[in-house]
Length: 142
Image (tube, rainbow, N blue to C red; front, side, top):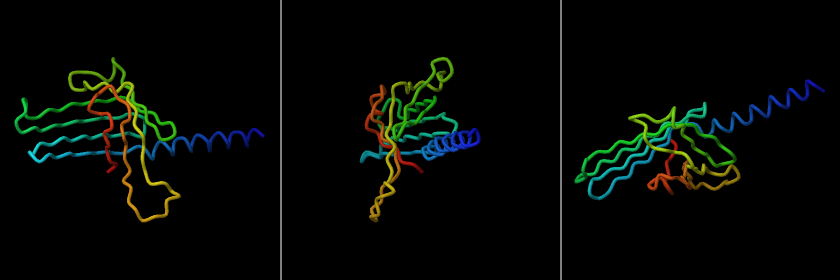
């Protein structure tokens, strides 16, 4: 009985770990405007539950013309919703200034039961964030 219980716990832990690995990876989104302005979003989700985020905007007539913002912290997944958090003491310094607390993103991918030939890119859609320009932002898995 103990062996059966230990096997069950091992399999359930491996299943949880395998699910989080499907979220891990690099996500990117680059938006170009007709005026040659560029907005670049890069998100890296590490398998250990940490993340790094880099936002770069290059606006031709902007002051300053190039802006870089960074964020880091931890992420957790429940079902297909990722929750981001940042610790004020560990994750903030002169470089990392974006606060990802209370940010949530939905993981979107093609359903395994969908047998059609349509292509659905794997992406994260930010559904909640205290960073105003992050809401409804899609970043695509590379």
